[in-house]
Image 1 (cartoon, rainbow, N blue to C red):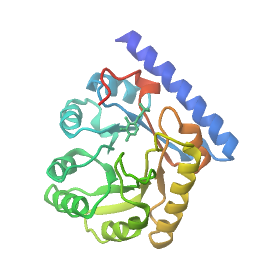
Image 2: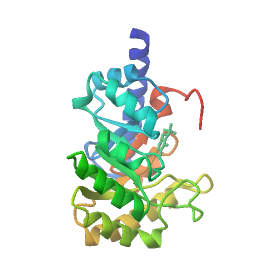
Image 3: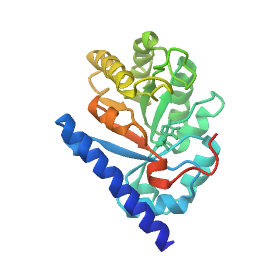
Image 4: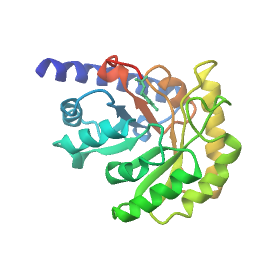
Length: 232
Ligand SMILES: *Cc1c(COP(=O)(O)O)cnc(C)c1O
């Protein structure tokens, strides 16, 4: 356990150095960038160690795994839990029970389902719209031209707050160009919704490009926790 803690601490320090370097290159304050540590496939004990090391945001992408893990955390109150995985409408009610932020909202049915579930649980959720940047939507997300209408729908929901946008860079092509498109889209949405200031972009392999294009939230897994036992 001590060895694991040391590994996590060293990896975290390296990622913070990368964020600091990218922020400096971008002329930004690294303090304006939140690190969401993606803990999927790793146990609650790792999350507790990360909380002890100062991590305040974790990301999970599978409902069943996430709900069990969150229930097992000894330091739940210190953490903001972000759901970042593809949402099926039959899972939405469950996610609304434990997530604080849902980053992967990409269609109307998910918006209405989440709002209803949040109300039932007496909770309020921060929401990001996941935008498809690769045209095909193969990694999930709303088409860019449909994002404005979906943003309006979230904004009208009593138990949801529209906080911004999220995207995964396409597998092919330059991530920085993709993140530049995301930033433009975020600007457009913020013109109508002044609280929608978050841009969640950048993972272990492309966090520098995301910082250069204005990301406020990075979702970093393997660079901190190591390679995942099985990539699904
Ligand atoms: C797994 C995952 C990440 C983290 O990816 P790494 O390459 O391990 O940093 C980020 N975002 C989403 C949506 C993910 O599913």
